[in-house]
Length: 151
Image 1 (tube, one colour):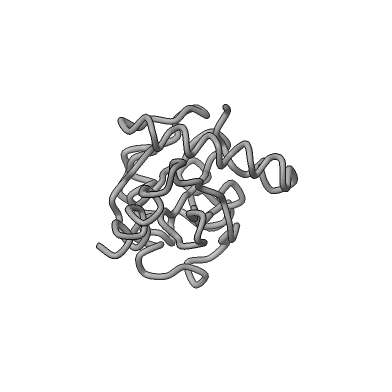
Image 2 (tube, rainbow, N blue to C red; image 1 turned 90 degrees about the vertical axis):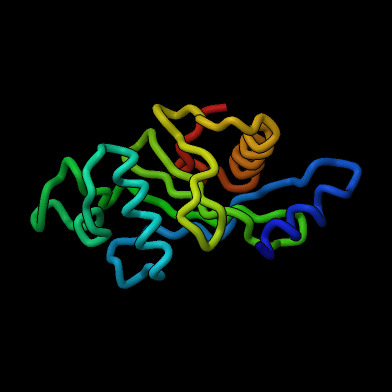
């Protein structure tokens, strides 16, 4: 609920809120994830391939499990923040061309990335997300390659 008030705080400004990517992580073990991030990873995986697997299975190395269902080595996790630096969304990118964006601290999906494209009913959010992708590419192109959205 507090996140909604943060969004409103920014939305009362003249320009729409500016989102930016921060805090890129590339988890290789569930030990690096909070309990909510584990739940998000499990939900993202189910949306990706329909299989209900644990976060551990999604991050297993090729010699530990199924390469087809593991995101190991092909995953990044980002915070999406507003102008004030408040985290509003958690963005997962995986398997080269896919991703899931959640409201921070929840398993509520805001958008999905399917074959590099954004699937979202909120056009304003899509525009803000595309702006964040372009900004990241401009500021640090070495990390922007982990954001699997084509603009």
